Length: 459
Image (tube, rainbow, N blue to C red; front, side, top):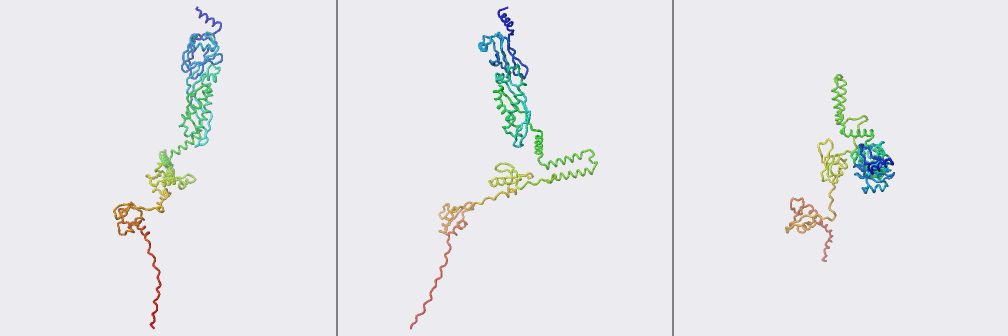
């Protein structure tokens, strides 16, 4: 027996310690987060190994104080390894002697498919439905990101820790955060299904920081599988959807009546009671006739027609296609009368110009009349005189030239004329000439002539 064996046997006999050659942890379970290796009061052999696999971290605790965290790798526990020797010196432990501490292995892989759900309905306010209670469920995933914090805050002195022991606390925090996130998002209930992923990501970013600082855990995923409404609210929404699918009630009534007639004809013994069949046929005929004519009425009288001006027409114009009331369509037409404005209603074979739709045409104001020329404004015409040249002159100037030389050459032209025209034949010039010609002066007053003097007597 060598001297080394003698030293080992002496340590075992006096210290009642076992020598540990390899410190490692292999685990086949899927829910163990922390495992305490049975190293207390056992001697860690000089030259032994510490094996930390991927997805693990090893934490040494010496006499109740956390000493160091070892990442994945294989470490030789020897005085020849400077880093290891320095570590054991710092905790005042000599190899080959009983170790008065613990070694914990922490599983740092992700723990996936952890279930969460709302134990009680969450009250929220929807802008379309009003106050409503919802329930939700899904799954989440997490992992230990800070083994030291996790040991201090969660594990304590426990020998092992599984997901079942911590999931309850995590779920309660997640449900509380989900309620806050959902309330702040203000997403309508009918559009929540399109926001599951966005809500999940927002909650994960919101809660993960708190988990890391408080527990040393990182929330790696949060999935919303379903958000449901109370059964009575779901039934009301189903009825609302069904009414939208029915479309034209007249066509639906005709279909139902025709289907009932077919079933009546196919039933066994359908012709055994002609009076009943005749009565049912008459009733069905009345229903079909009323549906076709639009006169199907429910007990209590038919619904009144919409008030004038509330009917909506399909409009297609410069602003695109829309369903608008007649007043709005008339307003758009008045703003741009030269554009194309077409209308359509169910039952029409095609689109119509707005001028052919009386209920719209009567609402369109008449076009504004062209304003008269402003005071002092002059109308100009193209003028050609005796020289044969062309110039643009006012009507007053043309009238003056014609008056100055009535027998001369005076031709004018403007847009819309078939050719050059004598100026005196153009209404504007003739009117100006008439206005410029003064009226004849009044006749002179009559002067009384004195009678001739009486003849002179020759006497």
